[in-house]
Length: 380
Image 1 (cartoon, rainbow, N blue to C red):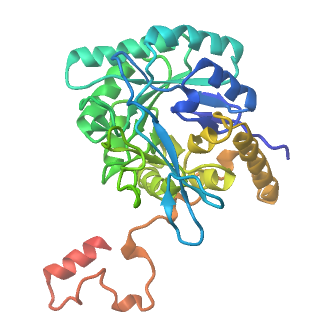
Image 2 (tube, helix red, strand yellow):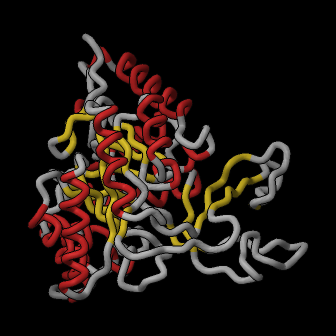
């Protein structure tokens, strides 16, 4: 049977399930055009806002590497070291909305069959900011954007009413999503921060507001390491540092855990997975948990800025995987999406050597109507 790479995600047809995420690789028209030429089915623009941003002096992003012999992690380049993670404290696009709109139009004219999602961000907590969200949504969709991704996830915005501070507040998640849905004619995705204990709560709030999909994870809040020789942070300005975002291979298991929380809670909803993807084996984990698409950043940044070799590996990996499972009747992503979602269970549900003697961490109940026995029964 012929292989079908295409996916239908939130009503949008993608040539394949692989996208570049909202990040430095999608900060310019030239990069997005190069990404489409390389074979990416979609891109999410660098986040577009209405308020001015100014990035810190010096480097905005660096990569951490680890040595196999001693597990030493550092931003210092050295022979034989492998990529551990990326770290950045870059803000959203410093280009204006008026700069972006004609470029969205030109990109869609050049690649009408590829998907362009506009990432947008405004503030929260008052009607003016909700109207800003609506203006961004209207203008981007009118320019030709195929969908909107609401940035509820940036871990280091310089305004406290933006980014991950929205994503950690289920009330704001719902209100902002609902405001955008009032004017949106295209699908609306919400990108959530992983910096929350129960991410399914915020996901549920977004869905109640009308979200068509949830995207996760953005980078994890973090600080760079301190150089043991200089006693300075490895990336700093005048010796000072603030929290930034950790991405790349190091966050793969963490991001999968967050995704598993959400897909288990909402098995019939749409999700796009991000975090630590550089080849198909990592993308496969997200798909098996229920994701319909996956997004890539760090690996692409290290591969000519937009990942031409990364997308080749992803496509080749998908084709090879489907060929290996031809006997199972699998010809497309939907045939195996979510196959391992239900394997994630509570710790108490994992089999013990002597199950009859296990009481979910409690002492054996005594007496007929012991409150403890009721608790154990309820947990089971």
